[in-house]
Length: 274
Image 1 (spheres, rainbow, N blue to C red):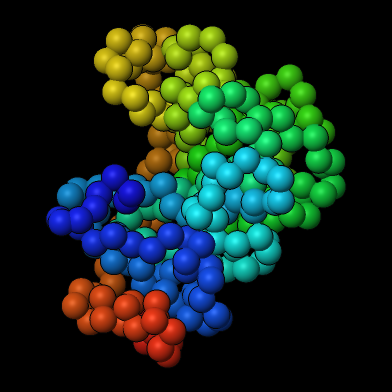
Image 2: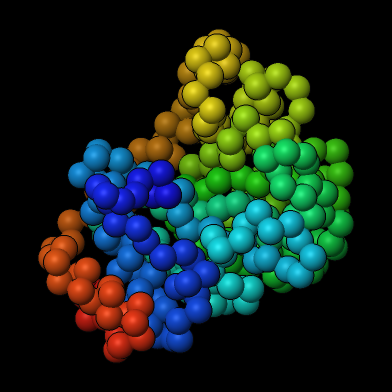
């Protein structure tokens, strides 16, 4: 949604701004704001949105996640993330939880280099993985281009069969559509087509390519081929969730007034609870 803005679309507050609100206003605002975003997107024919960010930033980490994070406490981040997912789904848009299994500890920006996290597996499970585990039933997730030394020191999560099979699929329990983060980011080595093939071989269902370079896009298609039967089933299951959820009655003007009131710290949202 950050690609859309004034004067045609509303500018929405950051995740950090929503997280700064007291409970229960924060969850109500997160849900209602996501419902408004879904309304914007559906008018454009967009049915998938890369929200919410469930990463838990820590002191000393690279600031790349910045105000996209809802906070640092796993339970509260999970609650706000769930509210965002519910708001999007009510508007017929599929949420994408990211960056699984957690980007908050990254000591570098994965747009430019490959971050290496040396935290132990037990601590990662209790903290970084926790919000994703709480929302494991969501239909889509996006991987992190990060090496977790305690799990697989040889490859970032996007390219790691061990991270995807043992952590994302088994420990966290996510069985939805798994899409890579942008293949154009420099955290991944090799040519873009090789990155795509590696991500799919590791267990991603889909790969994301964002820079618009047609030659790279054609190379990816030539290298990867058609989607698997398993991926097709996951996509169909996700779309069925979207179709079932996106039939909620919605009054845009009333929702915007209520959303603004929540941001101003006035009351709780009746609309967001419908």
